[in-house]
Image (cartoon, rainbow, N blue to C red):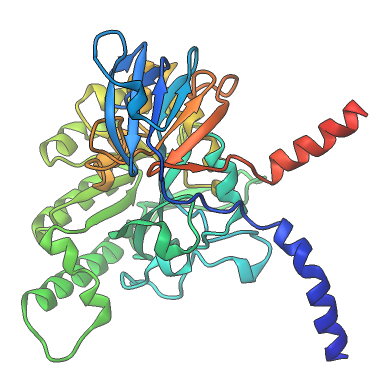
Amino acid sequence: MKKNLYKIAFLLLPFLGMEAQQIPAPKQSKSILIMNATAHLGNGEVIENSVIGFKDGKLTLVADARVVRFDVSAYDQVIQAEGKHVYPGFIAPNATLGLVEIDAVKASDDENEIGTFTPHVRSIIAYNSESRINETVRMNGVLLAQITPRGGRIPGTSSIVQLDAWTWEDAIVKADDGIHLNFPSTFRRSGWWAEPGTIEANKEYTKQVEEIKTFFALAKAYVSESSSQKNLTYEATKGLFEGSQTLFVTANEEKQIIDAVEFTKALGIKKVVIVGGYQANKVTDLLKKNNIPVLLQRTHSLPMLDENDVDLPYKLATLLTKAGVIVGLENSGDMERMNTRNLPFQAGTCAGYGLTKEQALQLITLNTAKILGIDSQFGSLEVGKQATLFISEGDALDMRTNKLIQAFIQGRNVSLESHQTNLYKKYKERYNQ
């Protein structure tokens, strides 16, 4: 019986290979020049008739083709992109790409670790670079992501990856960039999605906040004193107090945000980011004073409270930006992995509610890169930065015209094929027949 199973498995291997992710692109070996496209630099600037060159994975030329002198023959490959648009690769923060493949298949779900306070859990160890979902988000320009664990009060540590890699080790752009804290809510909601339910105060709120304060106070004491006995849980928080890591606090309510800022200040945690931030517009002075940016919740959402404007989720980015707060967009929530491909269109919605197109672009490029601490290498098209960019036939923030024809990660020409494009070609052929 066992011998027959081995035979079946061997026969299935070729078909299993057909379903695997596209082969990661090799290291850039030839210099490339992109000419005459409209370049959206990601820092608010636009070059209408641009020339962009890169070699060995780094940008070597970003300029206006009409005013700068350059030698076309110095480049091995020239891409004529008249009428096209060039963008820096989009960045998806607070994402679970590669941690879950199929929600209904338990063996493919590795986003949530057992425990309440687990900062030592590293999400990158569970990251699956072979995820077929990654292919679908690359097609819309999302080329980088912050892989973030879920569950518990402190679910663990995130890492930043590029989305075209053989293994999780190859994918890493910045390992263990931050620790994530789910701040307790001041209220509890009962009822299922189809039931009206009720909202009541969380009577455990004060106790839960004190538990968080106690945990971080003990962690700080451990970090500040040398000990012969290692505590992995407290050891993992060292970067928060040294300034090498960021504390990402998921908080949507006004009181949550205020309490989170106060306790992090008191403990001397140097880098703090609010994630979600639904009522962040009510505390912009506090955020700006303490230099705390916001990774704003999914734009394509309904208002959380009955008294809110129906379009509040659409215009929150504008309200915060005008108040001087650095804002990025995150996409956590229902079906978040597949919905990551809609990140550029969420930014596009912000452009319809008060921001310019280039300001909206910054929400998923340079602003997010600054928040994640990778802006020296990613987030904008500037000489010296990594050549992580793509060419689109039209406006990449508009779902009608976002159509990538080429994408590069660190100068590597990555595949834009996926299971969906294969199905498209297959049934297009049927139509032609």
